[in-house]
Length: 290
Length: 304
Image (cartoon, rainbow over all chains, first blue to last red; front, side, top):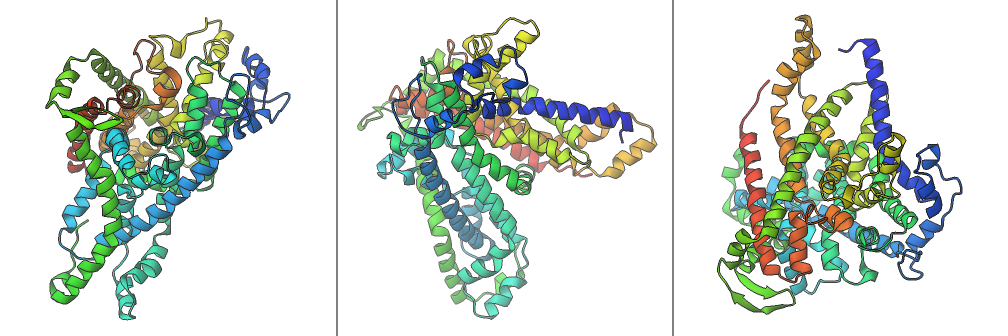
C-alpha cells in the first residue's frame, strides 16, 4: 500500500493527466460554438478561452445539420441531420435483429441436441477471427449481387449474424440452471416460450451488453457504409464527417467539422456515460474470457 | 462449453428428431446470413484472387492462376504498405502496452473519484475512428492547430505533423494511442483484479519495494492478460483505415499507406478487385497467424 503523501500526489498527477487527456474533446465542443476567426485566434497562444466560446454561435451546428448550399470552405450544409436519420434506422434495425438472431441461435446451441452441434459452433467462432476489413471487397460483390447496394438494408444485414453476440449469449444461457426450463416444460411451454419467458429475462445484463456493443459498432461503422452507399441522401454519419474533414486539397471549414464531429460523438458518449457498467462488463467478457 | 447432461443419452428417437427440427428453425436465420455474408465472401476472395477483372465488368474475367500473388511479391507499393502497417503495429505495441499497464496500476485502487478518472481515460474509446481523425486533423494542423499553439508556448518551432513524411506516421501513432489506451487500461484492470491481495500482503511483510512487487508478482501473474491485450491491439492496428482516409490519403510519399487503405484504393479507386483480393488473402494469413498465437497462449494455463 502507498503511503499517504505519495498517494495524494499520485492522485493529483492522475487528475492532471486526465484533464490533459480530455483536452481534444473539450476543444472540439468549445470550438463548435465559435466562428472560424475565434477558433484560430484562441489557439495561439492557448489560454482558458481556447475552451470557452467568447461569442457563442449556433451557426456551425445548423450548417452541419442542414443541407443548404454546396459543401464549400465558405460554409453550406453537410446534411448531417439526414445522416443521423439514416444511421439511427441502421443502428436500431441492427440491434433488434442481432438480439433476435443471436438469442435464438444461442438457445439452440445451449439447450438443444442435434447432429453437428460442435462443428457448427466452431464454424461460428471461426468467423469471429476474420475482420470486415479483410472480406471488404468480396462482401461488396456479394451484397451488390443481392441488389442491396445503395440500400440501408445492405448496410446492416451483413452484420446481424454476429458471432460475438451468439458466443456471449450462449455463455449466459449455459450459466442458467436447467431446472428453470424443466419446470416450464412440464407446464407445457414450447422452446420459443421458454426462451422468451424463462431464459431471456434472466440474462438482461448480457442482452444489454450485446445491444450496446452492437450500437457502438453500428454507429461508428465507416469503411462499409463508405463502399456500399453511393447516394448522398442515403449516407451515414461517419461518412459525412469523414468526407467533410478529409476532402483533399480543400480548405476545411473548421467550425462545421468540429460541430459535426461533436454531434456525431454525442450519442455514443451519452450511451457510454449512462450505461458504463455494461461496458466494463462487456470488455471483461470479451477481452479476458474470450 | 460442451458439457453433457446424462439425460441426453436416454432421449427417445422421436423426441430427438423433433428437437433437431426445432434447432434447425432456431439456427437457420443466423447460419444462412453467416454463410451468405461471411463464408461466401471468403470463398469468393480466394477464387477472385486467381483472376483478372474490372470491378464493374466482373463477367469479363480471365483466369491467371497465381499471377496476382507473383505481382504482389514484386510490387514495391505493396511492400511499402506492409512496412507501414508492421512499423505502426510495433510502435503501437511498444507505446500503448506499457502506458496502458502503468495507467491500469495507477487506477487499480478503490478510492473516491477513481471511477471518474477511469471514465475520462476510457471516453475516447467510444469515439469513432472518423471522429477521432477529424478532431486530430485540426489539432495537428500545421498553421492553426492547437498542438503547434502549445509548442509555441514552450518556444518550439511549429511542426509539419501529418504533412511531413517523417512525422506523419508518428502523429497517427500518437492519435491512436490517445484513442485506444483506455481500452488497454480496462483490459489490464481486469487482469489485475484476478491477482489475490494476500500475495501483496505477504510481500509487504517481507519488506519488498514497489519495483520488486511489480517485477516478481504483478508482471509474471499478468502474463496471460498481456498476451491477450497484445493480440487484440495487434489485430486492431492491422485494421487501421480511417486515419489514412481522413488525414493523409496515404501520404506524404506513401509514408502512411496502411494495408487496408491500399486494399480499398486498389479495389474502389483503381477498380481492380482481383488484385485487392490477393492482398486481402495475404492480410488474412497474418491475422490468422496472430489468432493462432492467441490460441496457444490460451491453452497455457497459469494458476495462482
